[in-house]
Length: 234
Image (cartoon, helix red, strand yellow):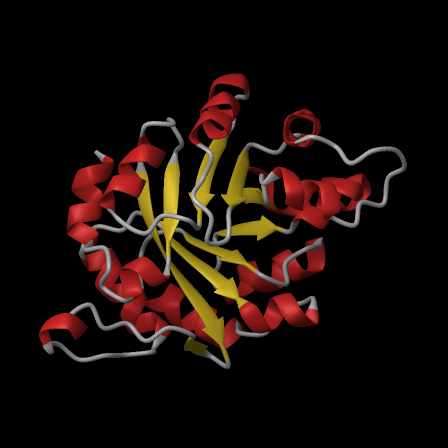
């Protein structure tokens, strides 16, 4: 299982200061996304996940300069989420240096837009889903009838050509049984984001069979040591 560090961008900076030595009072803190990415790649990160918070609010990529700065410093795939919900926005992200993009859950109800996005991004496209039943039930779906189940959404997207999903849980611990069922049922890569706060939680996610786990604050704050996370994920 890959352990993918995440950097949340706001006004060109990391929303969370990276200081893994805070507990011991050692090292130098930084909020520069490029330096944070460099550090994790030096430790073995196979991918860097970037969330453009300003882009998510505005509906189009905003932190393109910061994305470009990261891309210029690391030689691993750069996966960008936030404000990339259409083909034009994907092109902007790619031009800045992104190599992968994550669409929001609203794309499920826009099949024509999804096809256009797949034409641009192909296998480098993922769809972000919140798998929690209450979130699925209250999401503002455009379709008529009852809210779709997670299985129905994934099945529909896989049938349209989506081969990668990011399952975001907020601060809630991922449902291992539900996640394992998805991994077994669909020919797609599943990444888990959110809800992993320690190495035991990381091991539980690993045991579901997902392709990767995305860790943000837990890594940046030093709550989880990255080399230890790589060992636990093996």
